[in-house]
Amino acid sequence: MDQYLSRKRTRSPPVPACADDDSTDMKLTRLVSLFPDMALDALMEILLSSGGCVETATTTIQAQPDVTKKRIAPLSAAATAIQTSLDAHMRQIHTDHSDKTPKRPLTRRGKTLHLYSPEDIAAHTPCSIIHNFLPAEQANALLLELLDESKHFSRYRFQLFDRTVQSPHSASIYVATPEQHRQHTSEYTYGGSYRSTVRQITPHLRAVSGAVQRAVNAEIQRRIRTVYPEGQKLKYQSPREWVPNAAFVNCYDGPTEAVGFHSDELTYLGPRAVIGSLSLGVEREFRVRRIVPTDDDGEVEEENPQVLPEDISEGVVAVTPMADKASASDSLNKQHRPNKRHKPSTSSLSARADAQGQISIHLLHNSLLVMHAEMQEEWKHAIVPAQTISPHPLAGRRRINVTYRWYRDSLHPRHTPRCLCGAHTILRCVQRKRETRGRYMWMCYAGYAPGKKGCSFFQWADFDDDGEPLWERTTVDDDDAPWLENFADGEGQLAHGAQPGNEEERSI
Ligand SMILES: O=C(O)CCC(=O)C(=O)O
Ligand SMILES: [Fe+2]
Image (cartoon, rainbow, N blue to C red):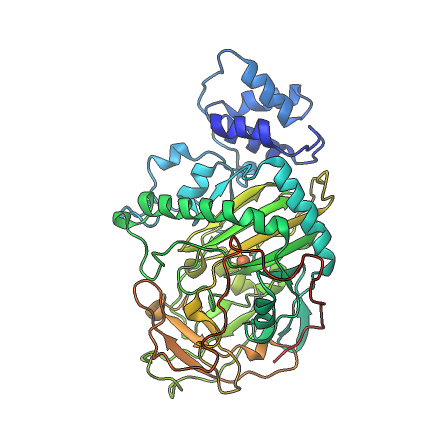
């Protein structure tokens, strides 16, 4: 905690003190996370006498020679949406991946538990967080660079039943070289489409990637040591060093821009992917919720990895063409059912969505969130629309997010299966259906591209314990084509400012 406070004091961006319009609950929650041993009513009193300013209240408390050490009063029913340090719970409740199963869930149906301290986040979610990650000047320089870049970003378009919809925020993919740019617009597909908004890595993005790489690898090792059973990496998790070679940069302009609940596409990341996610600008809420298994016949998902506000994405489901006893060798699976999508009632989805409640992590400017290896298979995440935001001095209403990713060479699109339409398939994990939960599959996703119909292609995907695909390596013509390059290596060949243009989104 001391470390958190002192780093925060020295490195925070120049946010005008007391200028935020957070609710009192939120301010109180921040104070509780900073001073977990103080009584709630004492904190409230100090907050009020500090004119509602968290910074002033913090200084006042720190100046007290002997902080009152009363037990925290139980939160009132009206305050169920706030929850801070969980030290008291942690004596009774253990994390998922230990041999000790939680005795009772921390979250409850329909409730959102707000976590602030890195310790609580690591203990109760599949993520870890580092606040004040970069030196303040470097974070600000990256933010300014990406705000400028964001004028080139686009909104993804995809098919939702009979409508073509757009993601409610804009984004671009960043890669290291012109050759990778070519590949990313003509070989890699995302949610059934080629992406046209692919850009060359910028100087600050590249400069920061080394620090991200070191921090993410350290967090992975810490997670393995402290959380995973017997201190071993998870099955299918790569034992190799995590090396970022692609990044998605997202821009959320204003409180209503968002990303609906989703899991990230695993196609090029492989099983048990780890993602380093850097937040800049306006603070927003990142929600996570555990995927609840079902005995339903189909694998029902609020599925589309594209980005939708919650109210829409909750309605997106795919019934995947699951074949109960299919094996990886069923390359054209004879047992699959037609690839159909249907729209379930909103009430059934929200009931399921909230079966275990949600956890909210507040992503402050200059925080690095690591989504660990259990995240994409077992949890869903979202950036929820905000009622209000506190403007950031450099970014105004905008939030920039960079997700650094490690694309595996072995999952380059030249190797991944093609479907009956000739399109690249996507890799997904069965998340809900109890019997096959945790199994991976390749499937056609072309039906999500506007104006295209998908086919019913489905094939189980098998991996070795380190997450490398188990398939017969076929000779391919372009085997000598360059692989994705680590961001931290080399300078690329395209001068910054000479970005390829943004063509219209192309679909397959
Ligand atoms: O903006 C964020 O923090 C999350 C973005 C995200 O989930 C994604 O790009 O897949
Ligand atoms: Fe995501």
